[in-house]
Image 1: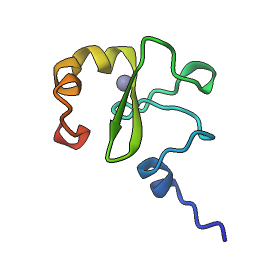
Image 2: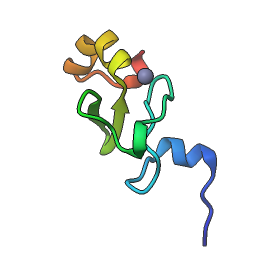
Image 3: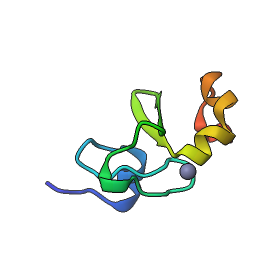
Amino acid sequence: MDRKTHESARLDPGADKPVVCARCGAPAPGGTPPPTWICSVENGSRHYFCDDCARANLRAIEGRLDSSWW
Ligand SMILES: [Zn+2]
């Protein structure tokens, strides 16, 4: 019963999937987010943001606004 699609993979990131920036889609080097990346938990799902996006949206992230707001 494997019904995974690209769409569902984006909506529900798993630990076994390559980590990409939730905003610009940049892949994490080595498949794991470096310390400079920010992990934001929204609705029980983890979203990673690369250094550039994290810096650009630091206030929104710290305000715990949903990423869809961007
Ligand atoms: Zn990014």
